[in-house]
Length: 400
Ligand code: SF4
Image (tube, rainbow, N blue to C red; front, side, top):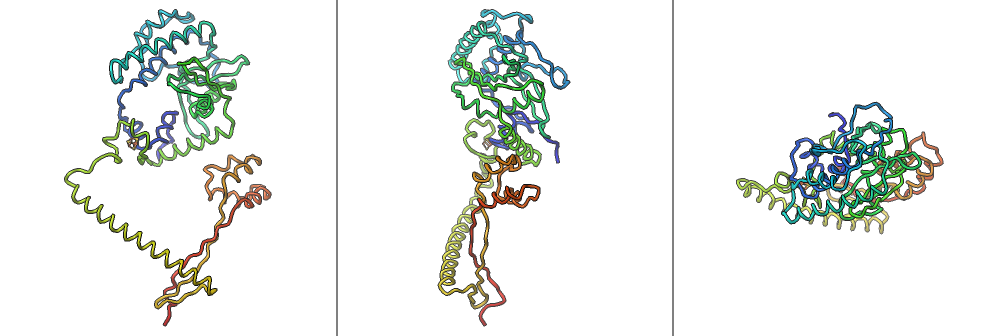
């Protein structure tokens, strides 16, 4: 089995969106086309990093790690950073912005000009805001790593601030148009950053913040509860297992529209001309067989139902044919409603045992003798019974 991969938030999210795309990006290292809005985000982040870095007063880290403070991935350093400890003037900020600007990926000069003007406006307003209300950062663009219950994770955290009560606030800048308080509450990215910061710093994380730069609005959420983090850990585990098992099936959907790999993706590649006729015949044959199969299934269902009705009217379970006997069988299964089982386990502090919440998993909890019999009895009580009747053929016992 390959080693456990180190997951970042974007790697995790890419795998969830489409494992095949993850493979193109993270194993085959295929480059993607530049896009204006990504370039814009990187430029603004890079300028903000240089602007805020002089304010950083580092805290002692929980673990000894080599100096991991770095600029954004592979982004060129601005040529003239301000001296440490100084606060950059607005003109210098704009000059830095102009030096850092890149026109990569914009669809037209007009689009680039629009974004460039937006960036100037946004940075000037944020600069003015910070001049009045200085943050107390302990790090900017810090690369943090952790081993989260067996899963290696890492990420670049835009900013970590000290809160008035001495805790920490994780700040992630967003240049996107729309953002809501719900985004901050639901963000898996912030959850992962909480884990990274708590693994590396002694102080507790007190706030998780998405900073909406266009409106200068911090969208704050409380730190995640243990159960929320455990659910994220389970999802990361599923992604990690999938990667290790080499599960890279394409999952076409809404993400295909902005995927650069359509021309090589099995979901979109065309049949080579030399194979067209042969494969067309196979598809036509497959279609005919499918239709026969559908008719056969309908016939089978209709006949089985007629036999069930007769069996119930006559009170019989064995019906001889000319070559075999049809024997009526009963199958009983118990179905658990996850909505009913989860609160029971949460009250007993056992919700972490639930994992994916599959029927088999719940059944194994009911059988698990390490769990209080009273809790197992309550879980069993919320199950509903399903009965299915079906026919089997006994070939040796037909009518003479
Ligand atoms: S085109 Fe769609 S299915 Fe294919 S790799 Fe891209 S996202 Fe996945």
